[in-house]
Image (cartoon, rainbow, N blue to C red; front, side, top):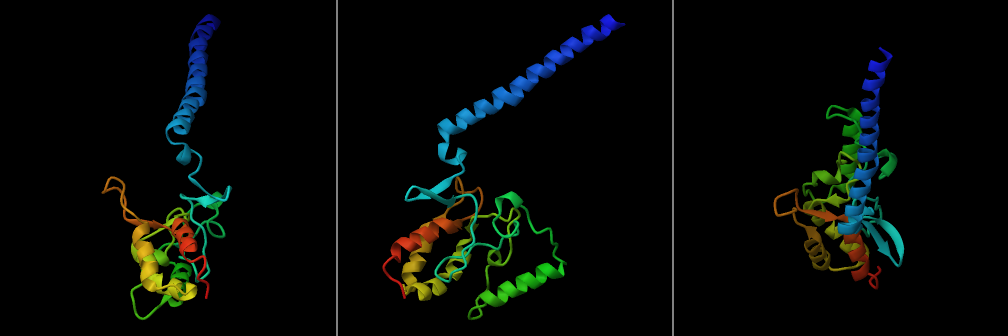
Length: 194
């Protein structure tokens, strides 16, 4: 009986060790190597650098509250855009807390009876979405133009140039990366302060 146990235990241990080495070491190292070789920017977090310093990521949203900048979607991640607390708010459509927060955001954004794009008052599922819809970007043009003393058509043109199209023309939706458009905005408005 001991011999039977020993003969069946040995292949099981060998297979466990083999798969641990294969799937726990070789496979992750191979994928890391492929990622670093073919897609180094994405594999390293799609970091955005300015003057040699990392200022953010193209994949993680940031909070912009100044009227001089395009604002991101609201974040439900921790205290706002906390990558360690990525998640939605877990509040359903019947939640009074969610309805009150959205109502406050709508009141803050209400402008000349124009419809407010939903992504300016609703958080994404991860709470870290770095993009807004083109409609949400165009909605903010007049406020930014006033705050920066820029012509509205110049800020509107910036939005048009910043629209990222769906991948392969059909995957996803048109979108605007908020950090990138705010960096472009700083470059065109560097010498035009009110």
